Length: 110
Image 1 (spheres, rainbow, N blue to C red):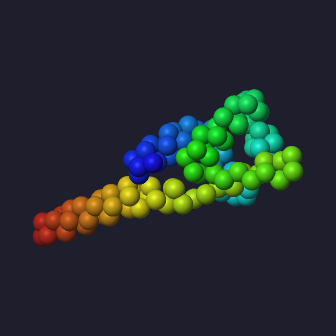
Image 2: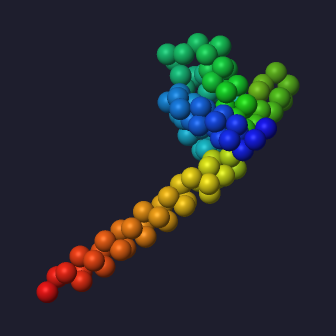
Image 3: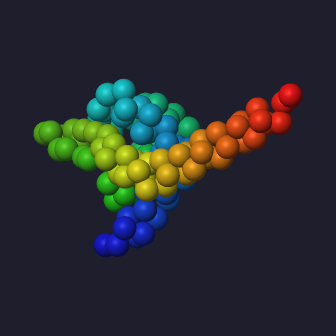
């Protein structure tokens, strides 16, 4: 799978608020599917599991079977890769532009 295909899966996964909320919960601690379902009373278990599958396909979570329980763990490496490719360079560019603007404004002040 190409980097662009992988990025597409990650952006798709991050594109839904329920999936972002799941990742926020898993950032604090790993949880079973049942524990996650309790956090989304407006969604049925099947819908939560579909969201988990999208996150797993994107590599954002790792599922571990323990007996009858399915434990979900956050894998932050894909988010870090997105940051490295997209956010970091753009943030550096924006900071550079702001620095130039500041120097120009300060140079114009008598």
